[in-house]
Length: 167
Image 1 (cartoon, rainbow, N blue to C red):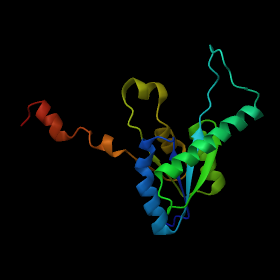
Image 2 (spheres, rainbow, N blue to C red):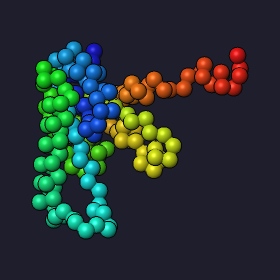
Image 3 (cartoon, rainbow, N blue to C red):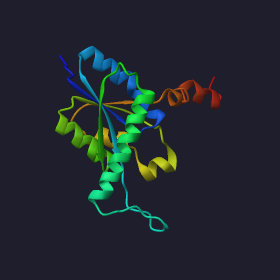
Image 4 (cartoon, helix red, strand yellow):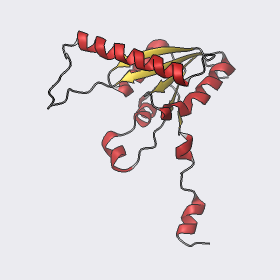
């Protein structure tokens, strides 16, 4: 029998990331599991050409990024998540795939739940998918949820048959 004691729901603070919220909250209630809402602030290298650069001196920069991320995550949780759902908020700074996997290991998470963004084509080739990379690299189960707006636009076999005039 599977027991879930700790669940992490990842968010990039977009409405798309809320697609997985129903799954995370339902599993949390069913199992009486602790729910974490994790946001990873992906800090890449500074822009090459800019007139105003923030202080990139390591500790101070990380503190500034973390403070801003906490404010954004708190606002997101307050505005988008039912207050009856008691989620523990968590912030990490770094590569999202690495930080999600590190958080899951350090906290003893039983399942990672995350929304996909449904990127395709060149954007997917260039950026890849955080969800896809977490699925491939995580030692624990990962549940991915496609946002409804994207599920509604999935091409079916009937669409293909109709387009190819196979009826």
